[in-house]
Length: 329
Image (cartoon, rainbow, N blue to C red; front, side):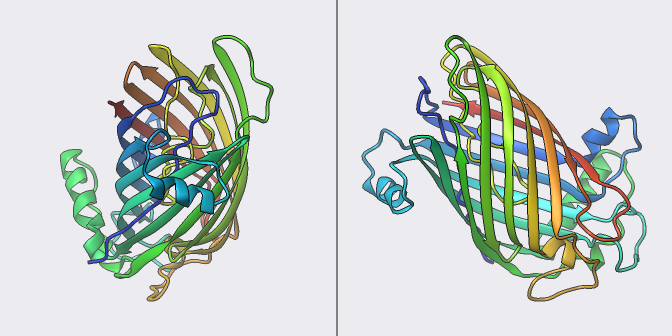
């Protein structure tokens, strides 16, 4: 079995007063919480679930030459955080009770991977490199995972997993840059951040370029630099460390990005071995609004996400929720 590496980014602002030495985090992304919030029927559709467990370690004050040498090779001044993660994502059509569906619907797919990553910083700039590898197909255990959850919740039995994306190794890299001090710092306990970013994905799962920005308001050190905790595209965000130095912190933020998709294996039915699937949409927009709460070493995150159509025959945009809990030590 192929393992997977993902280099994930978690960057702190140069003016941060406190750093989390070690943080464990679990993240869940699911379309059902969104449906329930708006009193819609419970259903699974398109990108239906992502779950990720990770551990981040602050390496900015350590003497490990390998981290800082790698950061300088990226054109950065200092390594910030190293992260390891294990994640699974799954995709379904929304008629999960139908055993056979036409090729114009989103294919069934599961993706299982582990990850490791490094982030780095220089004045006014945050950057990360992420390596990923993993596998799809039945060995990604999407079918048993979804069916077991539906047994627990007394939901409809998923019937179409026999037509899922086939077994393939997955591997590639993510490169991210963000400018973190675009606005003049505010004196006092509150900060306002405007953070533009760019991202390049070169992977068997996705070939994509992305640009966007975040606007957030919160207590000093708690506003993120980029949309955090993203399982869908195989990375955990550029700013996963909550950096506030007060006992309690809070931030609200909004993120919008436009993603050019040269390839999306989960829409197109595979990369090396394809199954019948619809045509991808080349340009995808995603907008998120979120809130982060920090109480001493415990961090909570909740976001709602609007994603535009990802394939030509999709009848509406896709909405899903993100929830995460982290504990720092």
